[in-house]
Every structure is written in C-alpha cells, then in structure tokens.
Image 1 (cartoon, rainbow, N blue to C red):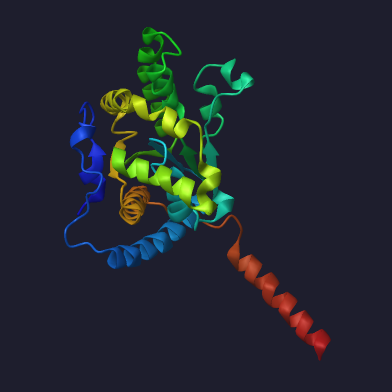
Image 2 (spheres, helix red, strand yellow; image 1 turned 120 degrees about the horizontal axis):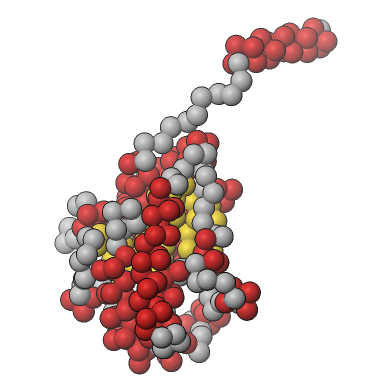
Length: 282
C-alpha cells in the first residue's frame, strides 16, 4: 500500500472525518510485522537524515496536529526519537506568551522552522490560529478566515527555500480519546499528562471537526500536503508516518557533498605522520 497517496488530502478536497475509520489497518497487517517494518524504516530514516545534515542544502518540517490525547508526543518519541538529536529540533506550541501575542500569528512559528540540514517537528503549530481561536471565538471570523491564505503563502515560502513539508493529523475517535483520558487517571506514570482541557474541550468535538475539515480543504497543497492518519492503533500510526517520511526524504534525492579538501594531499599528510610516529616508536 502506498501510504503517501492513501492518506494524503488532495488539494481542494474536504475529507469527512466522521466517516474516516480511526481504527483502520490493512487486513493482512499484523502488529509484529509492522514492528519489524518500522525498525527497517527507522534505520533508513537515520541514513537519510545523516545525508540531509551533511548536504546542508535542504530541510524538512513535520507538523503534528490532533485532538487532545491523539498521540503527538508518542509519535515524536517513537518515530523521530531514534534520529540524531544534533539534526532534529522539536518545538511545542502552547498558549502564546505575551511576547508572541504581540507579533503576527506566524512570528513564533517562523522562528522555529528548520535550518538547512535540519528536521523540525512541530507539536501543534501555526494551525492553532485557525482552530482554537475559531472554536472559542477568540478573534472575529474575518480574522481567522484570512489566515488560510497567510498560512499557504508562509508554507510556499518555506517550500521554495528548500524545505519539504509534511503535515499529519492524528485521527482518533471519541471512544479512544475517552479511554486515553481514563488511562491518564488510572496509570500513575501517566498522571502528569492530565490537563483541565482534557474534558473541557470534549463538548466542542463537532466544532473542532468542522475547523479541521476546513483547514484540510484550504491548506492541503502540493507543496505542503496534509495527511489524515488513522491513529487509534498507535503502532499503525507510527508505521504510516515513518513510511511517509522516508518516502518523502527519498524523493528529495539527497546526496553527500563533495569533499571540501584535497583528499590526495590529506592522504599524503596522514601517511607522513604515520611514518614519523612509527619511526619514533622504533
């Protein structure tokens, strides 16, 4: 299965989240097989990241969005955690600080975009400004509606500058979210994740559904596609995202740069130094 095309939102298409199966997986795919494939993908991703870092010409931005408990933290840990931290930056976007709120809504995100050779992962993102502010009516409608165009222009700028953009919506259903909230209450190691927003946001489920569907339709582009990932099964979520990231990185046709020094001259110096040291030991 070509996960890239299977879960990509085509430009101008408005997916109906109410009919997307959050439990989906191919019938013949088992967890053990998926785990083995994920290990292969992570090794390949590490290889590609090393070339991306060495090449130092292009970058990748991964955006993770989803409802509370959708699995953004888990995705970062299991898919991007094994990468070399020297070339990966993770940024979580919460309620804007006073300084951030005094600038345009893209200011704080633009500062966190990846430099050449880097992969940046956004845990939530600039899309909060067409989600939360819309659902809770924090700004007037004409304000957040104009932001779709601003976002598209922002992402076009990044793409034109050599950044590959992948945006993942982690799709869980109401029942799975409630179970994950229950786990946070019952499992001591997960108590720290409990938030006042966990239950206070649930009454807005339908409003968030509308907001997500609108941003998919308005902001899934050829340069910055959205992917709706069935995420009730965490192991399948991780597999799909890893497959898509590796496929996108392979499309970049990355290559190691040519050496910046005269290798023959360096070899001569190495052999001379080795000869001198051998003479001194004798």
